[in-house]
Image (tube, rainbow over all chains, first blue to last red; front, side, top):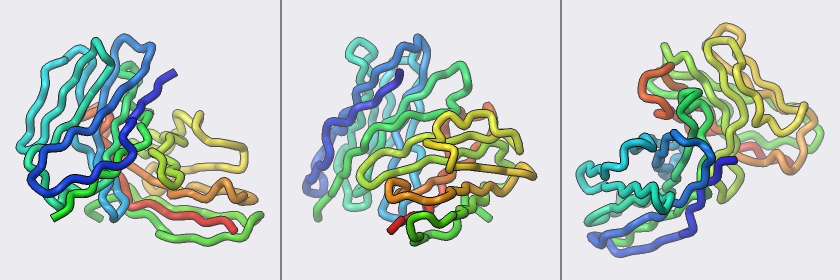
Length: 116
Length: 115
């Protein structure tokens, strides 16, 4: 069975602080995808990133960076110099590769609040 | 339209009523998904279509839940004899097949409240 755990239910920081959202996953698949999605107050989830299990290279996109460590089954997300617009619920997700990532298993989400 | 459109945005039903939730995916998107999101939880997979074919319905919680996509475009999720535990936001998503796996485009959801 696949499982994603986001232990941090809520995080609140002051604008411009750096913040890291933790994600730990469980899977018996040898190949899989990992994802991060953002859910703003409007409700629609927005895709942020996908990583393959065989590519552990960390990724940076502007103020966002992702740290994938297969040895600890973690895929953490860091926002540098946070902004109020980053306030949202963030979900980590997992899927198998063989079937083309047709079924995503989501964590419970971390509600991030950036205070001005 | 430019994005995934869902209707109604809000639905209040009395226990035992039937409801139908509609999803209009992004034009040209072959794949369509339904997820259920309970309050304070992450989305949970319900079912998946590729064109009009329902390829995976393993997440439907009971036989009261039924989804269809007869012409490979608009989809309807129907819940018969609603119960209080069905209260949730129902999210629809669409995507291209093969290209960018797992990159789903979600609608804003239909919030169902069963009294």
